[in-house]
Image (tube, rainbow, N blue to C red; front, side):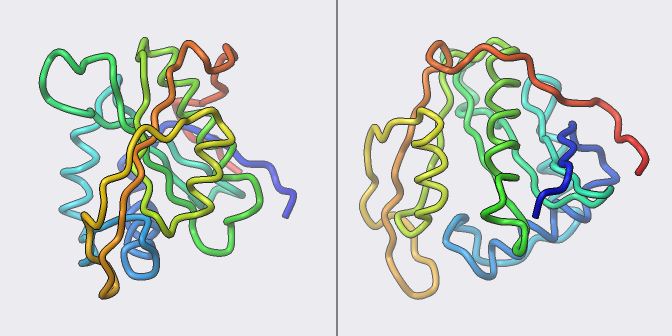
Length: 182
């Protein structure tokens, strides 16, 4: 699959696709510890928590949203203002083609340009592709929470990973603020 991928900030019109991708992950992966599918109202509330400094990005192919990534507050406490958590989900059928990597690079460049100092990722023990992606981009494992989540009848560990953005390459993100027509 060698198609052009457009990465841009998400808009409310992307919410249905973002929700579908997330619900697919809820039902099939340990990448999220949510266990019940989300409706559009719940995901809209989630999206509205993301502001200019905590954006949601989408990856589109031929005008279709195939992946999304977000920067979320690590904590509401003011001392954590320079720390952000990243999450990335790719629709089945589009995984393993570099889309997640391109989106992750864009969201990390965005975090750096927004002045964040460190990025945190939480990755379930069975999410080997996610562990590999994060570690290949400079994230380091800083701890493991043992058996903290139950999904598909199993207790699972969660690895905490951290990237200091001073160590991340300095390249301007190529993100459009408005979708282009295909």
